[in-house]
Image (tube, rainbow, N blue to C red; front, side, top):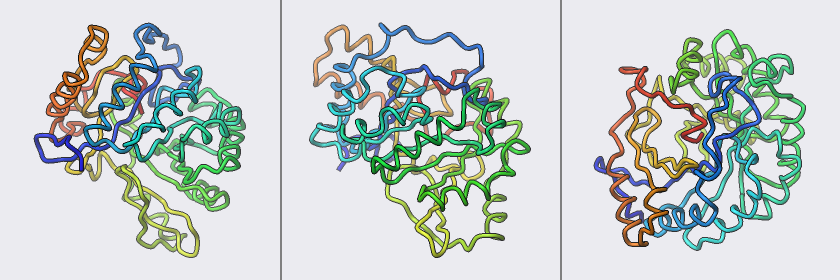
Amino acid sequence: MTQLIDQFGRSIDYVRLSVTDRCDLRCSYCMPKQFRDFHEPEDWLSFDEIERVIATFTRLGTRRVRMTGGEPLVRKNLTQLAARLSALPQLEDLSLSTNATRMAQHAQELKDAGISRINASLDSLDPIKFKQLTGGKLEKVLEGLMAAKQAGFKPIKINMVLMKNINDNEVENMVDFCIEHGFTLRFIETMPVGDMGRKASENYIDLQLIKTRLAKRFDLIPGVMPGGGPARYLKVADTDINIGFITPMSQHFCATCNRVRLSVDGTIYTCLGQEHHFELRPLLRAGISDHELEQTIRTAINLKPEKHEFNENPEKVLRFMSYTGG
């Protein structure tokens, strides 16, 4: 049982670990096209530092870690870090969030290193629209997804950030695509995180409307998926496919939030919708002991707020998602 209980009684057993703030795409809701204000590599936590922090989290009860970015596969030798983390005795689940552009080259070695499942961002199946939204090539993502499927990752979850009048006309096609390939599909509401997120939120669409629309074409029944995330699932009858709905705006899940984020520069962020954070890197490089590190993490967890304030105070969060980790 986790020893990390925040002041509102929530068990914190899930860490989203950013290994880089850099990315080879420029998604419209995440990072400006000309953005170059990245952290310098010397400010990144080293693999040794990451392993030490995650090992401390696992001693305190964390059982799930998801490696994120930016795009995590931009970081060199990521499979070495994955192998080190997957070997931690208390860690039960190591997963990866990716845009899949580099997955074709790395899928099998990542699977061999101990990553069991992946989440992949895919906001459009239209090559022209995909280019407009991300600056990248759809064919590279599809090639990466097929390589992940071949390598045996299961489940493979497709994350689609839904934007009104931009890609909401593709939801049925995306369901068909996931049924064809055996992927889990998750729709995500836009969130006003930073300037890019606020601009994207101008195209916000309530996912309850999407559920109603999908039910007209697909026979949807209650579904469930293992994992530590916030998605609420429906299953497409007579298939093995689940459709998840991640609704931070229309139906927030703050009361059951079980996670914190560790950024590439060693900052613990306790909520996407608040500015509460705790910087570990200076303490690590000053020689903090293991016991002191445990106490510091407990202190950081106690900063976790009761809920986000996206609806009440959308201007509050000023950072980019790539800084915080996906």
